[in-house]
Picture 1 (cartoon, rainbow, N blue to C red):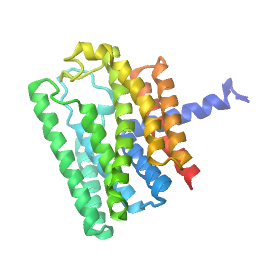
Picture 2: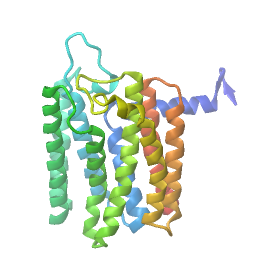
Picture 3: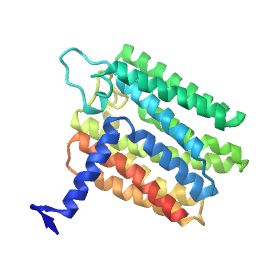
Length: 288
């Protein structure tokens, strides 16, 4: 069906890209990914979900990502990537919104959470603050000491899983799920890093892989290794839960497809992040 030489398919695709681009530009993509994955593992494995934890997690991830992008140093006259433009035109307005979200998160945490949940939340905040200090230190050194991709994956996996200790389930099961999510987020980060490396998209800090060119030459082997490992670990966590294994396979297939697409950097990131929240969203629907 066509309207003024525009197919319905093209119209819907354009609208989807615009909506996902809005999430990307406002630093909400990471929050959406974290919220969907947290609820996916909670519902698919433990059949348990918490709206309060989900909202606070999403708010805290946004606080961390938006602050990181807002304070990213930019030299005078240097063009910045679109995702770092948030709040730079109206910094006072951005800071008011940021502080309001922070205050609301703290208030809701004390209002709705138990002591254990607040303890987990403050521990995660401490990890995020520690990561900020490491990033600041690396900025002064001009080089990355420890791969940021691993740090980011650790933080995301911990943020999505550590709440589940309140359920009183076997600790080994929680650590298995934590490993599964770590591999998933690390898979995302490695593909983005590969794109940045080959596309010469980078910042002022020499990354871990930039300092080790031999590692860059075999970087694709790491990606394929993770692509095999993710569904294997998913099956190992819950062999009687086909939804978990199916979503792992679907994630790997769609991500590798996006990886092969020839598109510019901003669209590549948008498509990749969209896959990483649509797939767990599909898994939630299948698990209900």
